Length: 537
Image 1 (cartoon, one colour):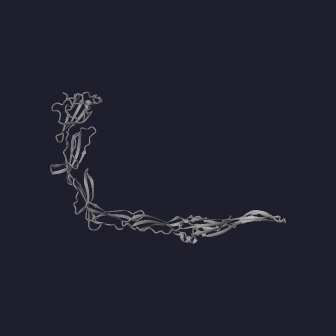
Image 2 (cartoon, helix red, strand yellow):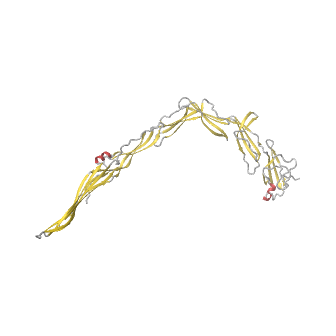
Image 3 (cartoon, one colour):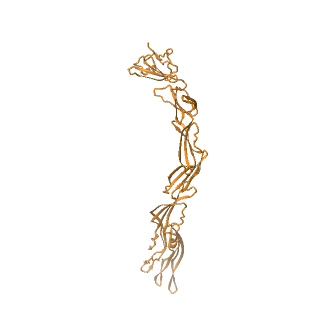
């Protein structure tokens, strides 16, 4: 007689399911069935006849031709967790249903595991399982159990970890959780011992990791110098570090400022008393940590005030300009009328000659120093900013003119002629400033004259000429810095340029500067250019 499962279309293969008794009074059941029409059982249109929903019970009807289980056949709370179809080793096409006893309460899936591997603390690992959708109401770090087992006394354990289990892709209808319960206490304790920086004894550093309690030191007196959270085999813990004694607990070194080669920063952290490294104190701090003071002192060791570099270079320096009050060369007379011997302009004129400031390349020595004060650079070589001069030019002009001729005839027929004349006067002045210059020749004067007009007339029966002359007198007066001033103010040996920048500030406020000094010396050849030119008109 055929035995069916959940539908008249599925006949149990071999007439009996496979049943396994599980831990805690639970059961697992595997039911293998053959479809009524196994040639089309795998068709999509037939899937509702051979596949059931995950989480449904053993005695639930199928969607098509569903039937009740026989009396006494179904196990209580037998929930479907997997279903699939495939061939057996002998070639039969079989639909396989897998069930487990599951309820809406978590139960232990297997016997719990008990150990004391975490520093003697009792640890219990439990695997729980329940029907899919069951609520888990425990809280890690808060929920507790009273635990006892063979060989173990009763102890209170706290939930230290709860992780969800994984499912295969063809499984559903259940949820599994792995719980880790742990006794409160110290999980690990590490003690290191070293010599103190002050030489007053040993410094002990103790690191304690604890679960569900505050870590405490085993050595006294001690002070806490650090606290953090940690994780031991997936269990959240608190880690604290303590020290006992007084003295150095840490020393670190690092290179000093790049501008001060050969120096090293040394930092000493200490408790109980401040320990200052040798050298120049750069920084200090004191931190209150849970009732004790951690001291930190940083010093720069090595020579700070020194010359760090010396080398040769070239520099461009300023050369002062020169001003000279001089005159032009003699202006030779030129005949306008060779027959009459009439002459034109002759004489000289004032010339103000200026050679502007220039640049000159010189060999320089560069020295880089570290010093603890600002340099006093009150005087620089090749500095033309303090040189200047001015020239006042004054011009006087007298211009003569010939008027018309008047002839007088007396009673005897004799004639006399007079020619009129006029004269005008003018004066002007101008001043020119020359910064960065010194004056060489401070005065000059010149006169330039010539005929300005000529009037012919008849006297005694012959032509005569009345001529008037114009004259220009010019003078130049220079004042300001002369050659002596230039020799005193303009130095050709010494500091050309000096650059300063702060590179370090000590704890007491002392500032250390990097001073770069560029110097030159051209005293053997004065860079000023002489004036020896003459203007010719």
